[in-house]
Amino acid sequence: MVYVALGANLGDAAGTLRLAAAEIGGWSLGQALGSSLWRTEPVNCPPGSPPFLNAALGLQPKPGTTPESLLDDLLALEARLGRTRPGLANAPRVIDLDLIAFGTETRATPTLTLPHPRAHERAFVLAPLAEIAPELVLPGQQKNVAELLATLGQAEGVLKTEPLMNANER
Image (cartoon, rainbow, N blue to C red; front, side, top):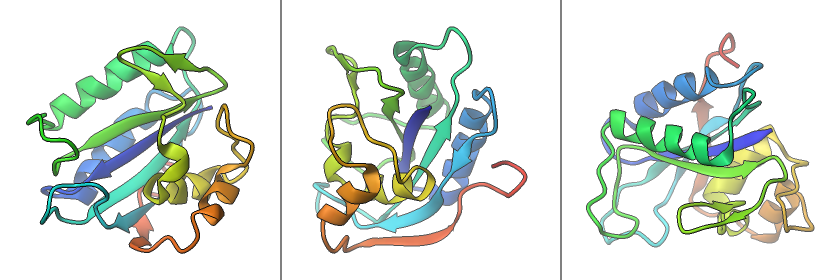
């Protein structure tokens, strides 16, 4: 399975995340797994940044899909949905799509690190991921995502809100 984290804190964040989820879900061999939307406080963002909506998707990649080709597709989707990169780290954004894990694949290149290097320490990634894949052990980790989330203690500022996908899309 492949896992993608989705986030947005500008514009119609819920609508944008749903559009992204529907497109990414279409890249799956089988039915994609979608978490709920989670309202999260900004982490390491510029002062005054609005709260985020975050979610996670699990999908089965089609034959021939590589981590690099999937990353290219995610970046192209971000651009189509209006993502710009102003150069300010963690700036507010219309959409953010991160490749968290691609099965047991690992990468450490200038353009791609797998698993995502900070996923295991971010409640805004782990909470949605634990909803759809609580037993998932990210490559290089000893604990599954539910256990990793529990070790973070009180995940303040992370609140489950509503489904990301309709029941017929899941």
